[in-house]
Image (cartoon, rainbow, N blue to C red; front, top):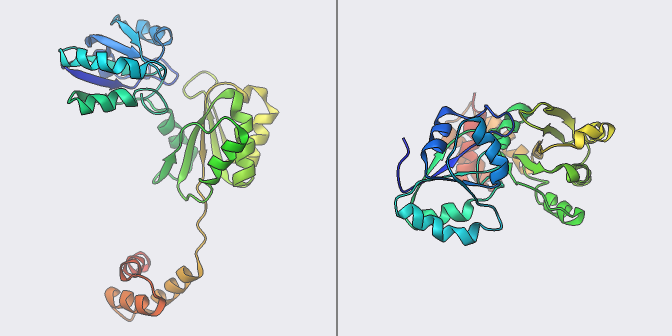
Length: 279
């Protein structure tokens, strides 16, 4: 049921038009107005699902100018749904200014979860998902892009970024330059659409596959890149060796105390490592 004075953040399909929840459709039918990034683009989806709610545009160029009037309408009792061209709004899409202004004005904001290209790509990447870093779109120019990537080079978390068709080759070249040819990655193209493609391999291998087939430069892309492998430092190796020598002889806290005193590490860090190594 739609509640007055509420802005709903509604996720819409990233490709296949039927990847939308029954609740999302009910909300879109029940609100007073739908805020869409591109009303013509979203109109096709809404008509497909029988949604006739009035729409108005809200995109990066007009968002700031429209925030005040939208909040006035919400406070007066209207309800709105915010959608983007595809996926979950605000994820590399407009809406941040509106949501923040609503919260500051005491207007309720409610999520209607659903499709997300970020999570869909992660789920099929075969790369670790317990810790990942989403960084959106890289800079357009190569020098700026390589400086941007250099800041991510030593990150141990899986890295996820978006890219457009006219820059995909250049971005893969930058990844090769900055992260090296052997870093593992997955390229996902046209998620849930007819020509969905998932390419697994090293950066060098994926770049070669894309170069060999011009069709692989079409559509929208999600790149999932393995994090930097953490090489143990000398102090880490020494700590582990000392803990392993004492772990069967002393209680964990005593092992941690000895390690902290002998190797000049914090007692808490030593204790945490004892717990990790203890059988």
